[in-house]
Image (cartoon, rainbow, N blue to C red):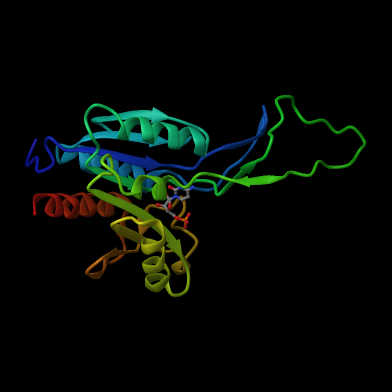
Length: 224
Ligand code: C5P
């Protein structure tokens, strides 16, 4: 119902945490709820976009109108995103809202680690692929608009502006996580939108409202 300014546009959204296995029963994870990424996916679909949501494990229902690809690890998330990007219909808009684990366990065990009297195991970590930076790379399949997130404390805008350049994305949605510890898992969000031409600071609002306003900003940009 209503306006469909994103009809005919394809969007890819990442959401949630990733789970990085230690062994078949244990994993490393983080406190991401997926609320913000799922809200963005739902809002883009409501404006008519064809949305693929690639999500790590969350407690959330699938957002209406989205194709959901469930993954666990960062490497699975990257593979799902590249499959979407390289599909017959190109991706116009990518929004990377997932809290991807920076590291995974190198050589995760395929058998459950046991207390064998030899003391605790040492976990060696290795770096995960950066999905946002990968999707931001120049090339014929690069989405026209790539948006990343940055959870920052301190000088939020300066740090996020540097991150925008480093990742190569078009916009960064910077969360001020120093205002409280409730952004991860909470219902509200305080964000600054960092673009090439400047910064827009939004008042604190619900994650659904941030998703709706971001989808409207995307629609306005895509229409230009
Ligand atoms: O570098 P940092 O993790 O702070 O960057 C956050 C942004 O990068 C978010 O948009 C997040 O989804 C994305 N990211 C990613 N793949 C990673 C790490 C972060 O897509 N491995």
